[in-house]
Length: 434
Ligand code: GUN
Ligand code: ZN
Image (tube, rainbow, N blue to C red):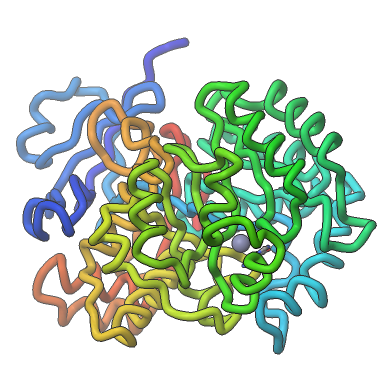
């Protein structure tokens, strides 16, 4: 492959560490007039334009973005492909919402042509919103994952997905069996896990829709292949938590159900965790498991307020999730707008640098991919965005009043959305241009 080398000049911002661990000032790096050098799909240098420009070959192609901020690509640690067509479904909380809207919508993925069409819309929507990596739930049908990975592979995206395992407490038209879920997941792992930048996630939907036999086979799969992911839901809604107690009376609590079947670990991501207790957070931290914080969904489904300070106290890895279609936006900027309010309602603050961390490096750490994505450090995949300070008249005017990068960043996260993302690059390729 011929060497390709390109440079991008703009303001540059990325996280270096969790502000909760190192303080805000040491948590980020900002170049007001920066230069990002990309070679063969990876970042090879980052710095002040004045220092790096003289080191480059005279004929290198330089793209200069004015009034713009380059950040790492955003990371969505929890989203559902087959719920793209049901965002904004009226009136129900989790369990009724699943039965009334979600299961019928997901059943359409029995049709491969439908799965292909939605996968195309879904990936475009991720990229339009600046999301370059996502941890994705398919439907119970293996073709939902095939459709998604086929699109992601063509664009050389770093993506993680899995077929839902669900063998009880759901309509017959949408259930598998413990045995078929194992065999079908295995075939998908063999086909996709580790292909290019794709990874597979074993995906039991949540404890109520899996028999003990299915949960045991999910745990078995995790032991059979290296570096597999595990994704599921936990403690999102109080009725759901009560139901799990009734279904698994012999277990200490909700997390203990998953723990018993060996589903905790460094590549395990639990969505929501709104009603977790201290002991459960401690156990998540001890096993290196992560939580996907999904504020738009938690508001929309009336689930409750996620206690981020408690997760921080226990040093649990936390990423940000849109949870579309329980969540109401593909935009992680809009998700951060709501995350801020979740903290406000609990008398806490979410600094813009913690927000940046959650949407980038924090998500990468939750997925154990911090050597590849989540920052603009040399050696990382060249997955990055160009945020346009003049995306809307109000954003443009408001940012003229901003005194420093902290205020700029906070305003971008409050007013920003898909319109703010002017360009998205993945592995150095332009994959979205507004
Ligand atoms: N719990 C089990 N399934 C789901 C789902 O599809 N969405 C959400 N938000 N919670 C769930
Ligand atoms: Zn979900």
